[in-house]
Length: 114
Length: 116
Image 1: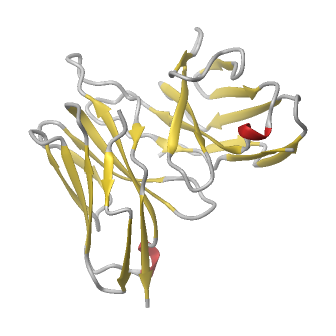
Image 2: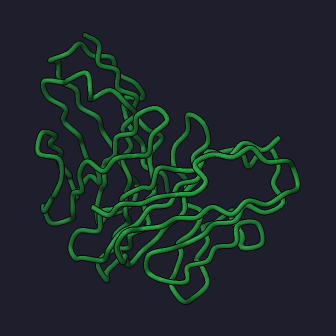
Image 3: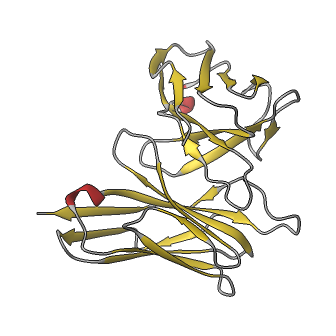
């Protein structure tokens, strides 16, 4: 089942902060975050695992609330280069440790203006 | 991360024809996936390409329409068969290596398909 992202779109001025949320109705093994610029492929930003481990972009932080099946991506001191569409992809929890099949949300369009 | 290439990068095709898209990775990977992304939309998984066996298709996608090959750990093809304008989309392959606990997926540049 497709995760729900919010907001659908956000407009910032350079230097401002933003939070993008991703929630699922299913228990999750992991949450993956990607940024896609127009006409380009999605770029991996971060992965968060059940149990608290995470790996990703050094300038971007995220959280994963396993009980609520929610993840949030925190973009602080935004730069022009942060503009793009952000997708979360979720992997449902399987007792064997998870499957790699990602189900993506509809995306959040972020625009950073000078 | 792996370097992934796709061919062709874009194509314009006639209704009723077929197009084969290639995905090449510069290192061996465990998992390869094919996604479709319609303009302005999210990414939808078509199938998982399994090395040495048939691909595993998601609901709404069938082998006759989207045959997939994966002859080795660095290469896969997706064919879009008997195309219609509704097949116009961006097709992306992605790869992941099962290196527990992280299974990051990385995407190829995509193939932009227009069907007339």
